[in-house]
Structures are given as structure tokens and as C-alpha cells.
Length: 306
Image 1 (cartoon, rainbow, N blue to C red):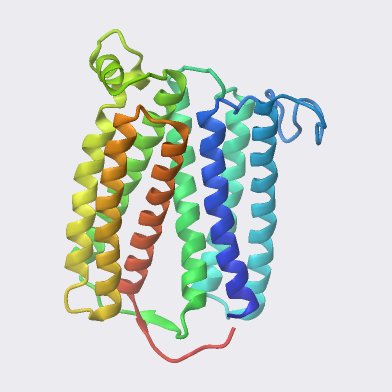
Image 2: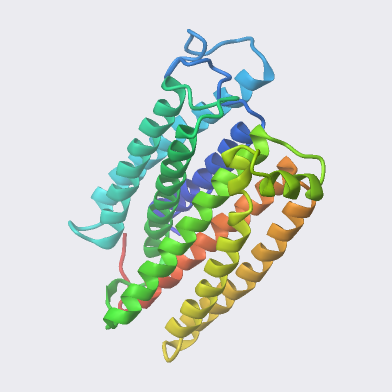
């Protein structure tokens, strides 16, 4: 494994960590730990003292900044290692662009006070945009590492228009699941419950907050999108060799595992540790679908040196 590939996979790992720590920030209500200051924290560049909320938020900012530096370095390596318009180079550029957007959204959340205990409906829109960009970022950095790791160059594989729409459709469905999950998790944070029955009662109550009433839709969307992912991945794997068939089987296992984790999460009234496990598996499922789609669109050829 060469330097570029190692750096790319390190960027993938760091991206996942930043995503999970961002969930810790949200779940612990620490988003306002640095006040409404950005990029400073409570008026200082690096506060030496502060509450646990401040420490949690500061760690998120520092790791996000570290990710940005790693992505810049990754792009420099990509420009030096791959020719213009090579897939790896384009994916690296996309990753940098999405990191920039991610930082701007993060700044907006803080500066417009869409964090902490704020219960306004506008927070759902910010959360939806934040999650969508995060998943696109994870897809871009995963493609950068995956294409760089392959011991072959990639060229276009023949695909039908229907197959392309199937991939776009399942991608949109998984993003819808993620957005609904992000809003459901926000409801869990702002309106915690002690049991499944208490949560269900609030979700079905007309007097409940919008974030509470929206929680009931996440499992419904998740089941529908999950089985759509199963159907699409197995259809795409037909007559395309063992490599893609193996990835489709992997997607199948992860989907069923994620649905089971979702049930456990609901029954346990969404403890923070379970939310993190659920999110981690969601990230792995998304990455698996991205890799599956990449392999459907591309075909192995000669080795390259990079």
C-alpha cells in the first residue's frame, strides 16, 4: 500500500470518527459548548478551562480541522500522483469541496444558534442539510480511497439507464433514511424518554413537539429503504461476477443487522452508546453501497502505479 492509499484510508477513518463525535456533540447537547463563537471558542482560540460541553465541542472542532488538513494533503498527493481527470483525482477534489461546505454548515449551526437546547423547526432544516453533506463527503472520500486501492485502472462499464436510476433511487432513499434518523435523534436529545412506551405515547400525541411526532416515521422509512437497497444491490449483482456479488451479500447482511439495531435502539429508548453503534453501522452500509455502485459502473483493467 503506497503513501497515497494509506493517506486516503486514514482520511476515511478520520471522517467516520468526526461523524461519530459529531453525534456525541448532538446527543450530549454540547453543540453550544463554545457559545456562539466560531472559529474561536468562548472568545478564545484554545480555552484551557471549561465545562464538559466545551471540551466535547472543542474536540469536535479540532478533529474537524485535522480532517480538513488531511484532505488538503490528500489532494496534493492526488494531483502529483494521478493525471488530470483521473477518477481518484476528481474524487479528491470533490472531497475537499464537501469538506469546505461541511465547515460552513458547522459554522452556520453555531453562529445562528441552531445547537444546544434550541427547539425551533429551523434546526431540522439545518440538520437535514448537515447530514446530507456529511454523507456526500463520506461517499467522496470512500471513492478516493477505494479507487486508489484497486490494483487496476478503471474504465466505464456498460450499464442501462434503468440501472443508473436504480442506483440514484436507492442513494436518495438512504439519504432520506439518514435525514429522518438525524431528526429522530435530535428529538431523542431534546425530548428524552425513559421507556419505549413513553416515547411511543409522545410520538402519537397531537400535543407533542414536531420533532417527537416525526420520530415515528424514521422506522417506516428505514424499513422501506432497507428492502429497496436489498433488491437493488442483488439485481445489480446479477451476471456481474463474484466481486460484485460478494459486495451485494455484504450489503444484505448489513441491512438486516442495521434494522435489528434500529429495533434495539427504539426499545432501549435510544441511549447515547446505542445511537453511536446505530450511526456507525449506517455509515458502513452507506460506504458499502457507494463501493457497490462504483464497481457496477467500472471494470477492472491493467495495474497502475500511483
